[in-house]
Amino acid sequence: MKSISIVFIFCFSSVFCLAQDNVDEALAYQHYQQGQYQQAVVLFEKLFNKTKSNTYFEFYFNSLLNLKRYDEAEKLVKKLSRQDARNIQYNISLARVYQDKGQVESANKLYAQVISNLPADEFKIREIANYFYNFKAYDLAASTFLQGRKVLNDNKPFTYELLSIYRFKKDKNMLLQEYLNALPEMPQLLPQAESVLSSVFEDNTDYQVLQSALLKKIQKEPQTEIYTKLLIWQYLQQQDYEMALRQLIAQDKRLKDNGATLFNTSNTFLENKAWTTAIKAFEYLISKGKENPYYLPAKVEMINAKYQLAIGGHFDKNAIAELAMAYQSIIDEYGKNRQTLFALKRMANLQAYYLKDLNKAEQILENILTITDIQATEMGQVKLELGDIYILTKQPWEAFLIYEQVAKQFENQDIGNEARYRSAKLSFYQGNFEYAKSQADVLKASTSQLIANDALNLSLLISDNLQSTLDSNALKMYADAEMLQFRNLSSQALAKLDSINIAFPNNSLADDILMTKSKIYIKNNEIDQALKVLTILTEQHETSIWTDDGLFTLADLYEKNLKDLEQAKKLYQKLINDYPGSMFTAEARKRFRKLRGDNVGT
Image (tube, rainbow, N blue to C red; front, side, top):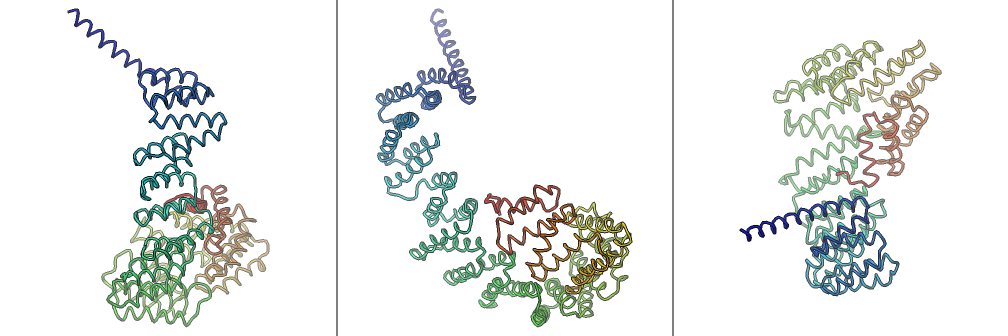
C-alpha cells in the first residue's frame, strides 16, 4: 500500500511539473512576442536549463541580445560550445554576439569559418543556412548554399532556397543567374521564372540584361531549347514582336514542330495589334502546306489580321477589295454555313463601310438569315448588323422593327439590351431626343456594365444639352456628326463637329465633342491628334461624364502606342484616385499594378 502511494505521488508530481512547464512555455512566448524580454529571458532560461532544447536556447539567447546583455550571452554560448563543440549553432550565436557588440571583424571571421568548414551533408548545410535565415542574415544564408554546392560538387541542390532568398531581396542579377542555372535541369520552372522576373524587373534595361545573358547561353548551348523559350518571352515582354517571330520560326524549323507554339503565340501579336507580324506568322504556317493542322486556322486568322490592318487608319480601298475577295474565296470553297459565318459577316462589313456597296452588304446579311444551322444568338447578332445597314440605306423603320424583334426575342439578355440601345441611338440620330432618353434610362439598369454605362452616358448627354434652345440645336448637329461617323465618313464627321461651335457659340457640348473627336482620331490612327483632344478633355473638363473614359483612353495610348509607361502609370493612378466609381477603375488598377511590377497573374 505504501509503495502504491509513492508511485501515485511520483506520477502526480510528474503531471504537475509537465503542466507547469506548459504554462511557463506559453507565458515565455507571450512575453517574447510582446517585446517583454525581461520576463521572457527568465522563463526561457529555466526551460532551456531543464530541457537543453535548441528551440528554447534560441529564444533565450535572442532575449539576452534584445536586452543588450552581451557579456552574459557570450559567456553562455562559449560554455555551451565547450560542452558540445560539434553544434555549429553555438559558433554562429557567438558571431552574432560580436556583431551586436560592434566587433564586426571578429563576427565576420567566425561566419567565414562556419561557411568554409561546411560538412559534405546536404541536410546539415540546409540546417546551417536556416540558422542564418532565422536572424535575417540572408546574404550569409545564400553564401552557405553556394559554398554547399562546392562542397557537394553539385550545382543542383538548394535551387528553391536560393530563388526564395534572391526574390525576397529583389536581387535581380543573382535571381537571373539562378534561373539560368536551374532551367536546363528543371524546365518546369519556366512559368515561375517568367512570373518572378516580370515582377522584379523595373524597365527595359533589365530585359536587355536578360537578353544578353540568354544570347550568351544559347551561343554556348544551342541545343538547350529552354533558353530560346525564355528569349522569346523576353522579346514579347519588350514588345519586340518581329524578333520574337524570328526566334519562333527558327525554333519551329529546328524542332520540326507542327507550328502549335507559333500559332498560339500569334494570339499575343493579335492582342497587341501587331497585325503585320501576325500576318507574317500566319503566312509561315500556311507555307507548311494543307496537311498541317494549322493550315486552315492560320489562313482564316491571316485574313482577319489583314482586315484589322486594312480598316485601321487611312485604309487603302484596293487592299479592302483584295480582302473582300479573300473572304469570298473561303465562302466559295466551304459554302455558306455556320463555319463560314465569320467570312460572310466580314464581307458585309467591308461592303457597307469601306467599299460603300450597301445593297451588296444588305443582300449578304439577308442571305445569312436563310442559313438553318446558325444558333439563335448568332442569328440575333446578324439581325443587329442588318439593322445598322438599314440605317445606312435610309430605312429607319426597317431598322427599328428588326431591333425591336431582337429585343423581344432576347428580353433581359445582353443581346436584347444591345438591340434596345441601338434603337435608342437611332432615335438620337433622328433628333427624337426625349424617346431616346426614355429608352436609355431603362437600360441604365442593364446587367451588362458596358451597355449600362453607354445608356447612362446617352441619357446624360441628352439631359445636359436640352437646357436651352441653343443647346438643343447644337445637340442636333452633334447627332448628325455621330451619324456621319456611324457611316464611316470621318472627315465629314470632324468637319460637322468643328462647325458646332461656329454655329452655336458657347454651347454645352465641348466635352462631348472632344471625346467623339478622340474616337475618330484613334480609329484613323492619328494618335497625336487623339492625345491633344484627350489631354484637353481630362485637364479642362474634370467634372464631365467623359473624363474617366478619357483618362483611361489616354493612359492606354501612352502605354500601348507611345510606350511611355511612366506617364501611363500616372494616368491610371489618377483615374483610380479621382474616379473610384468608374467602370474603368478595376482595369486601371490591374494595369497600374502590372506597370509597377506587381505579380498580378497576367
